Amino acid sequence: MSLPKEWANEIDVGPGDTLRLYPHESQLVIEPSEVGDELKEASVEVEGYSDERIRRTILAFYTSGFSSITLAEPTGFDHSRRVVAETTRKLIGLEIIRSTETEITLKNLLNSTTVSVEQSTKQMQQVALSMHEDALGALLEQDADRAERVAERDDQVDRLYAMVLRQFQRALDNPVTTEELALERTALSDYQVTARQFERVGDHAVKIAELATQFEHPLPGDFADRIETAGRTARDIVDQAAATIIDNGETETAHTALDRRDELSADLKETERELHERDIEESHLIALTLDSLLRTAEYGGNIAETSLNTAARAEHL
Image 1 (cartoon, one colour):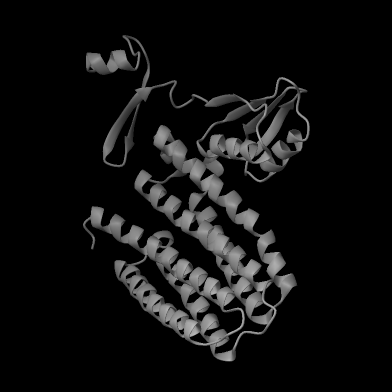
Image 2 (cartoon, rainbow, N blue to C red):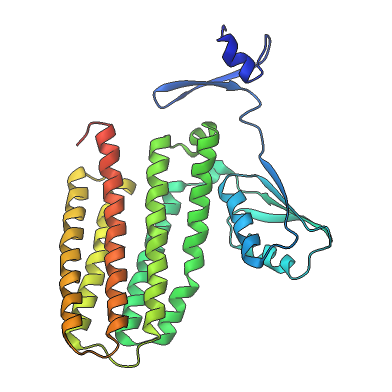
């Protein structure tokens, strides 16, 4: 096979070297044979790092697609060893495979061929929306125990999102990953954006649950009814929009979700205006709740817009 000389020199390919050729979407990809087998390994000295910085460092390497992460602390690990262990447990497929006084090596043991980004995203949708429903129920019923259980489930959503983001980043670095996942890169991008919105829905479910524990007085009946209805509508918008990505729904469904988002936004702004006109106890907590409901609907709108953008690229609008 004849190749452009500049390109061959740039990637250090010479006569007799083995290349891989495979179709990728509408392109034919050519790459050196060792690229697809290359493992990304990272090593970083974490001496003096705060607990949070250690967590962020591990997460960054994990979601960037690194297969191995070695953390070094020349003076020896103290309480930070516990932080490393806790963070590792929260990331799917990551395990501690070596631990000494001064080094800890983490390795991803998850086989990407067994990963289903579609199923992981669906699971995120189910958990995040269930959290949202329970959080709002806890607020309306002023049930502190129910609110606490919502926060406990947030780690599950975060774990799934980190795994989806990892697969997306790996696909950016190496097109072979899309073959392993049986997804085109554009589809994988849509799933990553959708999963990100589900993570945000989960975050606002936690915020609503935290607000639920701060109320000392029952909500006025009319506001309670509006909040309950708005919460149900916001979740429906997210569900409806997600169907256009996960279930390959019609573009008309995306337009409907966006129209409903705009209608709910207007309703919530009107409710907030009335809230400020009346002398209601703990009105600031109600206002924060309304804002979280609006954000939830907007996340559904983001998913719907992603679906329309994908349809436009394919000229299917």
